[in-house]
Length: 261
Image (cartoon, rainbow, N blue to C red):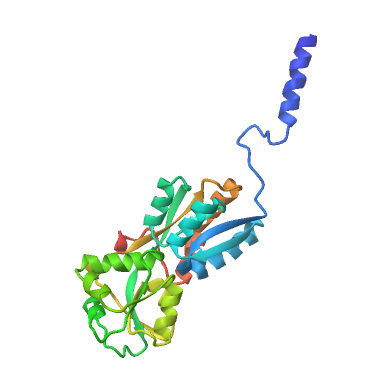
């Protein structure tokens, strides 16, 4: 009898122990998390951070920069909770390096040619980017997702060598490209359609689908996150209908969309 009672006391004690609920242990939401995000997603991600904090009580801090620069920071510091680059290429690299685990697709980045209002240089397509009289600016292919994609678009269409033979200014982020074009400091730049839709001083020249390279924007949980459950909840919130609706409000086409598959 005494042996039976002692076993019962052990079981009762285990059931009463912190974290034991008869099912999966659920951690309380973290007070804050840090998210690495490509600069082109600043507006929707700021709004998603505010909505996430309102619902879960977790404050979301962001590190906005070029996708490759963020990847380097993650690898060096091994700090932070989630990573949202401007293209799947970067999150695939992060996965290969063991920096990101769980990940989901969110929206599309659609490259377009941007020109100052009125299109003073008469830019109508990719071939005009290599004209000697057209001053162009490009995202840095070594740092910014738009720079790498723009470079691949030029290569796909046989224009890369002629483009880089010109005197081309480069920038670390797509936001700097917007400033160049809006201020009339350059005649053309390849940039993301979603980021320039609402800029009054910029006009857009579409790149035909068969000549373009549309990219998917993903987000993933870092493998070194100190708050993995909260980080995954944030990633899932971004992928939820509420999160995707915020992206659509800011001009993005959300994933999946048959037009871009």
